[in-house]
Amino acid sequence: MARKNLIEVSESTAPLRPAETLSASRPIAGLVPSNTRHASPVGGIAKTLGNITQKVERANDLERQMAEGHTVIELDTSLIDASIVRDRLEMDAVELAQLVEQIRDHGQQVPILVRPHPDAKERYQVAYGHRRLAAVSQLGLKVRAVVRKLSDDELVVSQGQENNARTNLSFIERALFAARLEDRSFSREVIMSALGVDKSALSKLIGVVRAIPFELIEAIGPAPEVGRRRWMDLVEAIKPSAIPSLLSHLAQAELKGESSDARFQFVFRELTKKETKAPPSGQTGRWEAADRLVSATTKASGTTYTLALRNKGAAGFGGWIAGNLERLYETYRDSEKAKTGD
Image 1: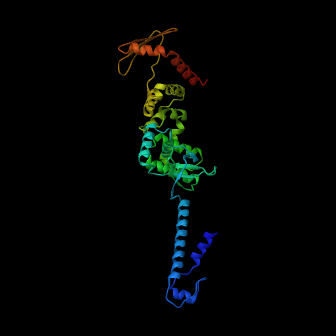
Image 2: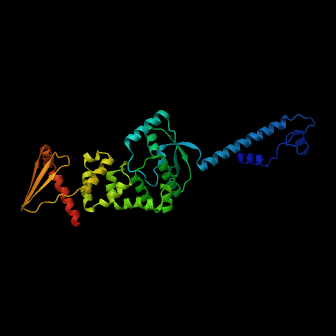
Image 3: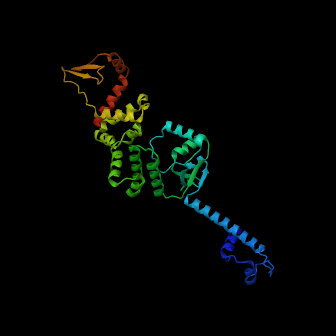
């Protein structure tokens, strides 16, 4: 109430005039009019009113900036939830560790953008800055953030535009972001604005995700070096019957330990390699590895199938086959079931 009254005084008070004019035309309560030209009492009141007005204006300006999201504040990271739409497949551990060290040494230079959580009082939701939030959280610090009231449309547009400007989202991550936005019923106009693309490019992004099972995309990962053309080539090569076998291979430790780009190359090679057909009964077939370290001859005769390995790598490759017969047979059975739909 005191603040309101002070504001009313500062707004209703006429422009200050010389003391003798004020005393002659409108005495101030508590001030004895004087015929002398001593102006210090009125000057003191004017100065006080001016200071009050300035403080009120600064307070109003601060409130306005907070409402518009122009002021950087510090928030407890435990009060902040992720965005409504995920934009990354995975957070690179090496890049995150580097960001942690950078913030540890130099502080958080760029604030994140959050909005008041629409469904949880006194909590917030990230628009952009997930990696900075994760890094600051690891350090046990409060995160510097701009709080802005955002609609769902405004949030995803801010998130997408920040990613376009600052981060290195891969093609498939952008495609997944677009598909997720569409799945949440955002309009094509909002999605195009978020990604900075036209209708044609957006259709291609979403088309890739719709053509490749999400489980396979997730198993491959972001593949940062793989662009649109290669993913569209993968769409053309995809075989639904091959998916179970591919997922089984990608789940193995040796492939999970490879880079995401290497996992993509493995899947693409498996889908585009020429299949070696079993020779008719009584005939032989021949195969040779690309590096020529192993060659094989095959022969089918009734219920017997013979595989003979030769050359420098024959013993090692043969031993590996013998040690993985159970898994190879399971993969074969899964492939046969996929063909029949069982």
